Structure formats: structure tokens, C-alpha cells
Length: 435
Ligand code: NAP
Ligand code: HSE
Image (tube, rainbow, N blue to C red):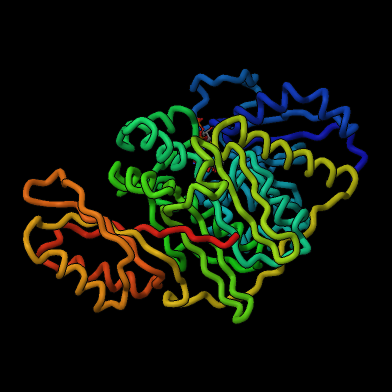
């Protein structure tokens, strides 16, 4: 605890999020200061390019190109790491924590890759690490899992965790556009990562899923141990089929835990979600998370998942928590003690599936496809044929009865080997979630 009358904040990275934090902290300063009983001072900030035009006015004397100078400045009490990536951001974070400082970060990739090291450094040196903005933008899901739902065990958590992908899928369906044009808009609006492949290939969602799985189960699941698929292969044919049959396609993170055997499974994939589910109707840049606790039942959280303002809201809430910690010693509940959870084998991950195949339009093809699925012991529930853009070809869309990941992968492998199948089939999961 300290008797400081002013808390100095250092911001490493004044891009989309950093400028939003600067802007909203300035405009909310009087109200926050009166609530907290302390002055908040934006002491210093770092950028890569001093000449770049920014939407916030920061005096030149308070800007540097050296984020480590901000992180290690003895006058700075709270360091906001808003640079991104896992190299420089890790150095900055660890340097500040090793000096016993409090770090606020929006960096899910960093936490997923180096979470144990970061929390260990914070513990060892009396520092603290806050990360509300790392998952689901403005939704306070970290606080909900860490504090509000502390009485619960979580058999199922699933959610839309990437604003860029939800924005793309929503506009593809609404406007019939292809995803590259919409991705350009997502970048312009500040939703996408500096490396947008992290968004569209599912890795950003996987980083966030890893953080939620850790908070819910104490286990760090690396992305290499997850099933991770992105949205790049989704076409208008998939979106039309889904809508006609009562589904929306959403990129979901799904975290399941079987408490009978302890097994955990974390996966990220586009999912046909029944329109009766709340999350199927969460659109544009919004994120949505369904958390099923054994005591509370299902709780659902919806809000803007990316962009300057939503993310700044979460960062500023962490800054306020950091001030309360520094001034009054109000620490949040500690993060979970790290545990080992066995990961579920593929055959125990069950569900119904959707397959889209481009095939030669000739006699006997349907029989070959039915035989290939039967060999893998997957039972077809429905099959529809649509015209294909390819000459002499047809598009087939199959749904299956309940099967499992091992069997459906074997099916896809068999189908891909058939001469009448013109390219690797698209496999999507159908989200029959109980919660
Ligand atoms: P951004 O717009 O690319 O901003 C990054 C900032 O870091 C820029 O100010 C950049 O300087 C600075 N920077 C980058 N490399 C640097 C280097 N080598 N040395 C010094 N400064 C460097 O990124 P952002 O969208 O604000 O995202 C920041 C973090 O928040 C990331 O971890 C991201 O995943 C996370 N996040 C973003 C959102 C969102 O909606 N954008 C939401 C939640 C979380 P210049 O400005 O001079 O280039
Ligand atoms: N690129 C991320 C998204 C930013 O679109 O969700 C928020 O974490």
C-alpha cells in the first residue's frame, strides 16, 4: 500500500488500443480521480515511429522509441503493454514485473505463449499482471471467471472470441461479399491484428481460448494441442445452407471438461450454430461467451469484442484495479495454481458434422461417397446437391449423425482420396451445445 498522491502511468505502444486508452483516460480523468481519490498522470509513452501522425496529442518530451525505458522508469507505477507480439512485449512485461511494477496488457498472444513465466515473475517480485482486455474486448469475462463465478466448475465454455471473424462472417452473409474485401474494412476499423492471419486462421481465438481454459481449469493448453481451424474456406454456399436449415456459421472456441475423468479439450473452428442459441444472433464485431457453471448454470456475455473503444474500456478497468491495489492493497483473487489436466483423445470429442464436397457430376458418385463414409463408420443424416461453379461438377452438402473427431477425420481422408472428389472436402462442426 502507498500514500502516493499521483499514480504515473506509462503506455508502451500508442497504436489503436494505446491511443484509445490515452484518449479515454484523459476524458474520464476527473471522474476516475474523484472515485479513486488519487491523481492519474499519463507520464510517458513509447512508439516505434515518432513521426507518425496520431489522433491523440502527446507532448514530444513524453514520447520515446524505447518501450523498455518506459517499463523501467522509476517514476512509472503502472506499465501498459500495448505493443503486441511475443518478443519485445515479453521483454517489456518481464522487465517491469521484475522491478515489482504492475503491468496491464491486452496481449493474448503473449499470455498464451508465456503465461506461466509472466505470473511467476509477478509472484517472485511482488508485481501484478492484469489482462482483462486480452479476451473478448470490452466484455469483462476475465473478471467474471476469476471472481464472479468463483463458486463454479465449468463443464462447457463456448464463445465467439474474435471480432474480426465475426464481422467478416456477418457481412459475408448479409452482403454476399467475399472475405478479402471485408477483411480490409476490419483492418481499417482497427479490429484486426497487425498480422491478420492470426484472426482469420483461428490463432487469435486459440490464444484467447487458452487464457479462458487456464482461468477455468488451471491448465495452460498450448495451441499445438488444440484443434484450430479458421474461416478462410467458408463460402456463400455454406452460409446459404446454414441459414436455410436454421443455423448461423460462427467461429467458436469450445472448452469442454469431463469431470468424470478430468479430461479437457480446447478447440477452435467454424460452427453451424442453431439460430435458437443466443450466440448465433451475435453479429458484426460483437463477441459472445456462454459459460456453463455447475452452480450457476448458463451465463452469457455479449459486447464489442475488438476495436479501440471497447478494448480501452477493458484496459482502463485494469488500470483502476491496479490503482486500487497500489493505494489500498485490494488485490484480485489470485490466478489459479497451475494444474495438469489430461487432454481428451479425439474419439471422445463427439458431435454432428457438415461436409461440403465438389464432385464429378456422373453416375455412381453418390454410392462411392456413401461407401467411404460407411467405411469410417460415419452415418449420413442428409445430403443435398447444388450446382457447382466448376464445369461437369456438382456440390454436395452432407450432414452426419453424431460421430466423433477421429471417425470424421478418417472420413475426410477417404473422401479426399476418391478420384470423383475434386478437392479436399470442407468439414464444419454442428454446435448442438446443451448449455
Ligand atoms: P497497433 O495498432 O499495431 O499498435 C502497436 C503499437 O506498438 C504502435 O504504437 C507501434 O508504434 C508500437 N510498436 C510496435 N512495434 C514496436 C517496436 N518494435 N518498438 C516500439 N514500439 C513498437 O496494435 P493494437 O491494435 O493497438 O494492439 C495492441 C495490443 O492489443 C496487441 O497485443 C493486440 O493483440 C491487443 N488487442 C488489440 C485489440 C484491437 O481491437 N485492436 C483488441 C484487444 C487486444 P507505431 O505506432 O509507431 O507503429
Ligand atoms: N483482432 C482481435 C479481434 C482484436 O478481432 O477480435 C481483439 O482481441
